[in-house]
Image (cartoon, rainbow, N blue to C red; front, side):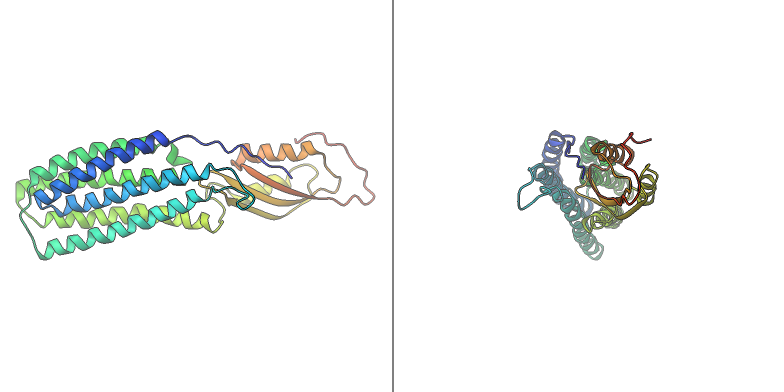
Length: 298
């Protein structure tokens, strides 16, 4: 067997801290002026931002927990908490969308006067906060589903807040109050779109699907092309966390192998497919064949 125990990951603690602080302040501002302006869109966006603050805290906590060392009870450690966090984040977004839709429907039934100026000013502040926070997680969103969840939350918020700002402008110059709840329903669609992909990917890796960035046929082809390997079976690839992938398989190597053979396969699986934890079981049947010393992978 060969294992790769180097599970280093980039530290996003500062990014989470800044994002949580800025968005917490903005939620308080948005709630206050949402009531002052009687704006359903501002209150809806405040509710969504509040769920984002909780989601950022959850994602940050999951990353911290995932760094705990393996134990006799949790032999892989607690890395899968990052997967659970991304799944819960997706559910939180959907729940927030439901509350926003309900508030919008109520506003359609009971229209009220809305201050377009206040809506625009508060939304402009939110656009800066949400866009800035999203950029904090942009780089890490490409390789970590948990970080991607944080990025999607903030990127969706930036788009939603831009819509609220434009809505405030439209209300100011047209006086049409139905624009505000209509914007809330648009916000719901944006939220659901961003949540669906996150929740779908989270569920897949939670039930040990092959990570979408890995082609299992290519991995099997690589293993079959290794000199000395005659058969590959019981090949399994799954996610240990939102950043780490594991592989286990049986290789039939009739002519035998040396330890370096395993080390080389492990390194190449890491370099070619970003598989970080490899377990190989070698099966060999010498028969009448002469044992050949290992000459390295070609």
